[in-house]
Image (cartoon, rainbow, N blue to C red; front, top):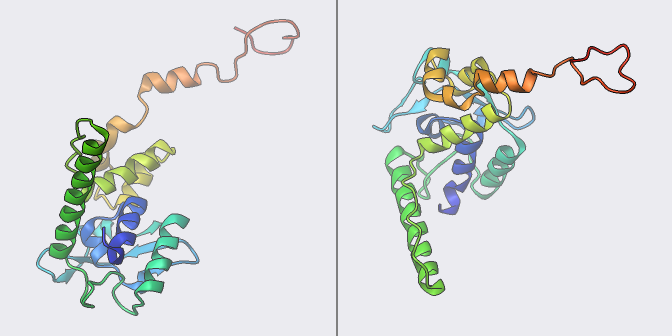
Length: 201
């Protein structure tokens, strides 16, 4: 991605924001001290700014150090007092420009892979057709793997209900068999020498 929006990729992957929410961020929405991003609005594909997708989409999202460092570097290079992400001409970054840059980056990656394969005398790897929303799924899968509950994921992603969260991500949580297996030995120990006083099986 071009330097002026590289931090946007890091932010999307590290916060789970929708692209419209990212495009609607103002500098004041970032709390660098607390490490959080406040979602108050979204930029629509028409370019207009409106409220978030649902009432639950208005939220505060935790942002790790990787995200806040990327945003600090971004603002140091492109100072702004209003919109967080702007185009090189200074106007707020819109959906059309984002999509153009995203698609160009994907094509550039494929070209680079094709050239590398030619140099190395191998068949090029066909890169998967990634879309921006995949960064949201990446974030969700990462926090689920880290132990986040259904409710936590719902709140952070701004889903209207936990049903939506489960419909999309249920397969990522450990199944009942996995939970039973990992908890099978809880409070139980194998009997052996010196096992007196312990609950043995």
